[in-house]
Picture 1: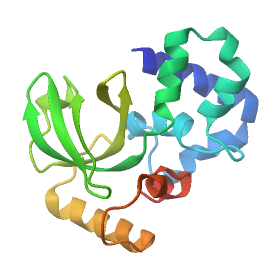
Picture 2: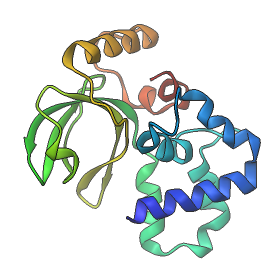
Picture 3: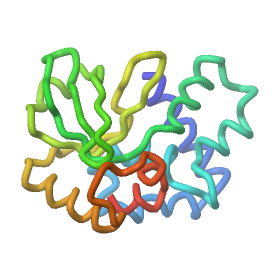
Picture 4: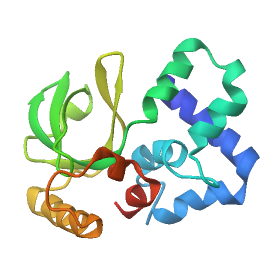
Length: 181
């Protein structure tokens, strides 16, 4: 709930502060409204205007209006990255264990709603945020990929990165790569 509130606040800030330059974030999506679960967070945590994501501008210019918990949450967003996460295990109503198919990183993600519909071997495009010892999804595409579909996305991503082994996280954190995915 805190993230949804902060994302909405940053979206209003971005629209006022950057206008059309920020509105261009939607150009990277075939249908931003359909993928709002991914687009909303991506537009403020990843999309760069002009050379930094909205969250960095927001923290710099609005820090005094934020509570300590809000600042900590926004800072925890910055090391997160967009990738293809394969579901390894599901604990319905509680969590999913996922592995990033590009970096090899694994997380047990607290996810009540998603754990009701995800199954092992599904893959999702999204971001996992680590905060205070808990991992959560923060921006996921609404449609899981079957193993064959995920393998094709991973093949194309590895080709773009020219990397067949584990991809360093710094390469995955860049806005251009997130935009590619």
